[in-house]
Image (cartoon, rainbow, N blue to C red; front, side):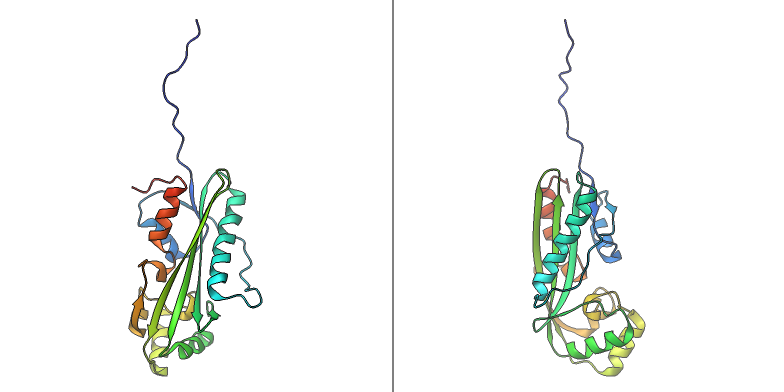
Length: 204
């Protein structure tokens, strides 16, 4: 008589990976209190000719998630990208002070749409979803002295559009319009939670 085990087999939880080295995205995802790892996506972020900011953000978010998922096919991978959109022109990370001054002078008194895309991919299960959170930000008119003081204080050279709303950058603004409060910081957490739940990650 052969013995058999009637204990139901449970599926181990999938590993969650944030495909980004951004400290802002890491801090946002950490708010959920669930375990995740970080991997750097190897993706060329050069815009394609004629590519609109929203299209660029979505393409790069998906490319980042897919690239990391190729290396970790069993994991649920989050990719994200943000592009500042000034009248249809993409504004990326300034990288240095002089570029940031130029960006903020251009955005002074203008409405800028921060296009923040997120994608979730799990190769082994065939799961792939992406979404876009568009945040309309109205900048107040800025003097050169204000721009200089802000940049010297905050040094937001790794932020799209040279603005960090979670710090002193909030003083640059008149109004923020969005439906996902963390999108402007770099990761739309309402959309992210929805997608990783659908991919099999327990959030609550």
